[in-house]
Amino acid sequence: MNQIIHIIGVLDNGTSSLNPQQLQTLKQADVVISGTRLLDLCRQDISHAQCFDFTGQLKLVSQWIKEAYEQQKQVVILASGDPLCHGIASYLTKKLPQLNIRVLPNLSNMQLACARLTLAWQDLHICSIHKADHGDWFWGASPKHSLYELAYALQHHTKIGVFTSPENNPKRIVELLKSMGMAQDWSFSITEDLMSEHEKVTASLNHSEVCTQIFSDTNIVILQRIKAQEPIIFGNHDDQFIQRKPDKGLITKYEVRAVSLAHLQLHADSIVWDIGAGSGSVGLEAARLCRHGHVYAIEKNKADFDIASQNQQRMHAINYSLTQGKAPEGLEQWPDPSAIFIGGSGGELATLIALCLNRLQSHGKLVMNFVTLENMNTAINTLKELQVTWHMSQLQIACSQPILHMNRLQALNPVWVITAEKTYLEKE
Image 1 (cartoon, one colour):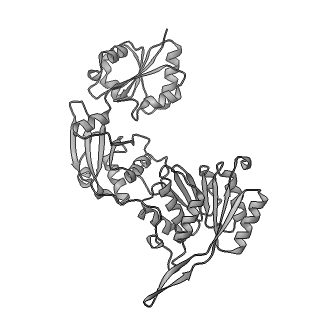
Image 2 (cartoon, one colour):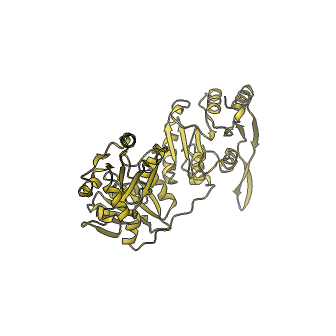
Image 3 (cartoon, one colour):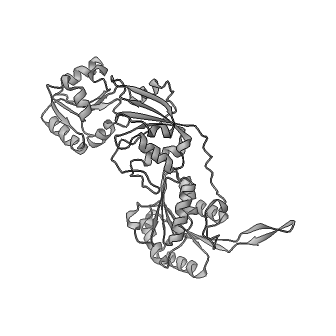
């Protein structure tokens, strides 16, 4: 018997949305697996089959399928719309690669939503917040947060289609936009219960109007940017960062920051550690360069931690998580980095260097800035003991300063930039 596990896409008008092949496959099923809503919608046509409801217990689906497969039963999984567009199909193909799975898709609900709005969708960025409920989004949330994907998309796209959930609903999206300072920048179009008798389409709402309405749990949100976004550039001048007062200027300077970032050799998906974040300038610039990656920063000084947090919000850095503490405490919870910047060590420099090189991914870069001879010597001696390939540069920079109707040069403190590379031979 040639067993095929079928995943069939269904719309909110139930089996009326199925073509003859899909309907025949469903009627021949011995086992039907789906969520409560779709099982209820298709109840008449699946009464002959053994039904499993995976609402709240998605992890059991693979087990149910395997058991039915071993018993030579025909299995159908019902999914909403196109099961391969933020649906269950990709999850199951990864979980059960050994089984013969065939997807019989329907129209995507996102496609239907755009059709109702007569909105071209070839340039639509699609994301899903139909995930576990992690509450409202907050600055510094990790990529595991259910709203992280949307928060990131708001930074990089102008038209976004959002699959929502009862918890992560339109009003929570409004709160997300408010916390990011973007509530005035986007319009909302919301479709509800598409293809059902309760279908409703509401276009071009502002954030205040969204908060005054009640929406069905089965909705899709289309966000369109109505205010042009300021371009994101590399190289923010020092005065664009909030700095500690009265000691203003305790920041990795513009020119040193540029050289240090160049030595880090960052990629779009780099995972970066910023140890001794200070005002956050290096880590926040890195976050802009690593738009598909993430920066994990730590700062022990409470005043500097608060300043770095403010700078994060000013720069709308989603992919940046800041911790108050003294390294190496807490670093064990961070993912292995592909690049590390040490701007301050809190007296634990030798220990930090050894730990960082141990955790650093192969061919990753460790970049350190020093202004004292003692710390520079500690770093070099530690790297020699660890037999690591390293390189040092000294930056001596002078910047123009006005004097009467003329200009002079004012020297900045010399900075040593030390770079070490983690090679495959050094992995152990």
